[in-house]
Length: 446
Image (cartoon, rainbow, N blue to C red; front, side):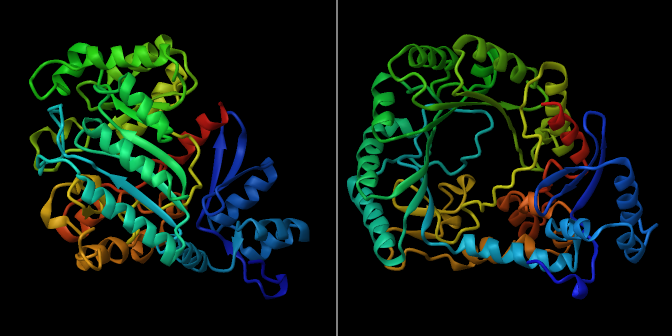
């Protein structure tokens, strides 16, 4: 909204950051618009004086032309009230959360797994597999959402356990979902890669999968210790055989292959080694190798081996400075979205038709929020309310005053819930917090 100049009581926005970079010189970044503007030395000094209250807004305005003032106003550098901008963001967030035309849907056709990973957080694994009755209940639910609420688009993820243990269910259910006439904006599967073979690859291609996430925690010795098969045998060799066959086969580059290298302070060097080795081996523009940060509970004695936010940032910046590897986005993401946890209609559907809000809650009966068999679908309104409203960062006084709010989005909702209702002290802030200039400096060198 643009206010008339004669009624506009302007002030320096708290969402402004003045940066002095080696590569691009003086810059102004605004987190509300996610914009980066180059400044000359004179303008930088004026704005710096304004931001530090060494120069009054009245005196500052005398130094600017009307066009400059209009530019600053249009780009929210000079604002009437930052709190109004927060309310606008809050309103937009609520609109996204309660939008029933889009659904974030995760399906776990089984909780069975052929691996026994040392850091697995699925504590409540129950043996079983989705049957046709549950499959049809899910399809009926999607049909109802389309008919009653105008559902148009879905972000669909297959999850487990190991979902490819139930590849036939994925084929059947995937085909039925495709027949509903809904647009799948994202369609991915999270798999350990052990069963990513010719037959399953064809099924995934046929139902329109676009992205496959596979985890490799290093080379054979390291990976097999951290991610062994359930029978205790290694898994690295078979996963690499599968990737070799895929990249040499007819479906090469059909999917984005996102290889996640889970790291802590014991195996951090494995990310760099795997990044180079996999990219040299497969030479594909659709191969992404990225670090996954191990998270352990505070009571776990191994918690100290996990990276904190600043340590993870240091590692990512170091990877680029030394090796040119972009392991983290250097410029803030302006995509406004809400985790499925925050959206009261989005869901993770378990193999029995039970509904959860977070991957980490799969199998925990206490955290089931509904069931496809239930007449109303939703049942645990207390937990739904906590996720949607109780941990709303736009109602958190510290978040509302934070200059990073527009690019942070409140952090992980699960961690926020643990902080508020379980007394934990998780760091939920964006990696850019207090490190923005470091990131922008490297962004300017790309």
